[in-house]
Image (cartoon, rainbow, N blue to C red):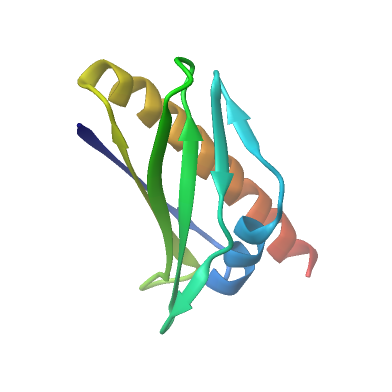
Amino acid sequence: MTRVTVTRRVVADPPGVALLLAEPQPWADAGYSWRVQPPTRDGDQFTAELHVTDPAHRSLAGDITVTPSDVTGCELRLVVDAPNRAAARRLERSAAAFLDALGVRARERSAAA
């Protein structure tokens, strides 16, 4: 297994991002399907299990953590184990797109509030 870790900073509050993660919509990108379980709170951070189906129809598991940032907003940290290095490179690109889309939605929702 090869561990994939992707992080992003988002200018949005952690509870708002957690609410987005709790929405029951699947995410899809380049043959990957992302499903996120409702997040749980632990102190000032939120953690959610995620399940990814890759283009080869393998089921991969991981998690996403939302923590307050030192400056403004929060940090998103996604960790998933891929079956091999080649799959990890493709998964990393999809994970980055997933977090980027989540960040855009979080900023839009935060600005609308």
